[in-house]
Amino acid sequence: MKTLTAKEQILNRIKKSLSQSTPMPFPEKQSMGRQQVIQPKTEELTVLFAENFSAVQGQFIYCVDEAELVAKISGLQQHRNWPRIFCRETALIDLLQKHDFRGLEFSPQAAAPVAITGCEKLIARTGSIMMSSRQTSGRTTSVYTPIHICIAFTSQLVYDIEEGLTFIQQGQKNMPSLITLATGPSRTADIEKTLVVGIHGPGEVYCFVVEDQL
Image (cartoon, rainbow, N blue to C red; front, side, top):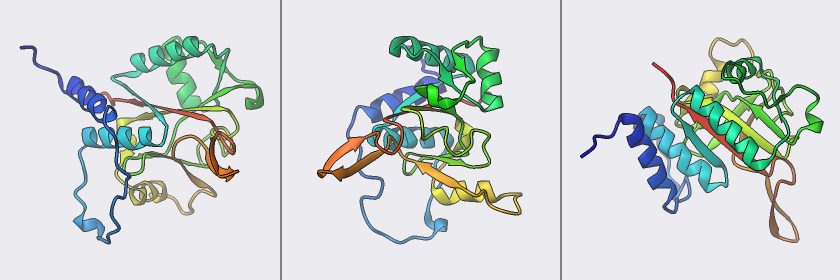
């Protein structure tokens, strides 16, 4: 019998969890101090984020390394026939171009259907992407394109919002002027009491989580 590697085991757990129905992140109202919460390991955070992010209609993609990340983004771009993808974060541009990804757009994002950003942290408990104004993508990149792609690494996973805010505050005299949480595609039920996706923000959100190479 073949012995599965640690990464294969993580992938299998993610696939299994996404094939089952997912309960709400907060099934019961209860009050507990942070000292009572056992913090999951990184692989468990990956599975928890995948469950909760998918439960709010986000598209979760796990990548074992940067090369697989670029291959999957390229494949998605070809499959969806996206002409170009807008990105303005230097670190992400360098990462993608290092692996010969050539589908980037550097003109104003208003002309691009898809935008790539990084994030501050991924919040596993709610399946949220935490971003702030100190990112070079600014306040609007993830909002004013129909499709948002977030690239993150497993080291950016935290359990809850408090951990994310603590990270942002570390070493800073002042908090960023904006901290935002994106939890799946934009949704509203204000139009004739019917749930509509993509009204006040992107209609599709993809999160590519890359395994950190130790």
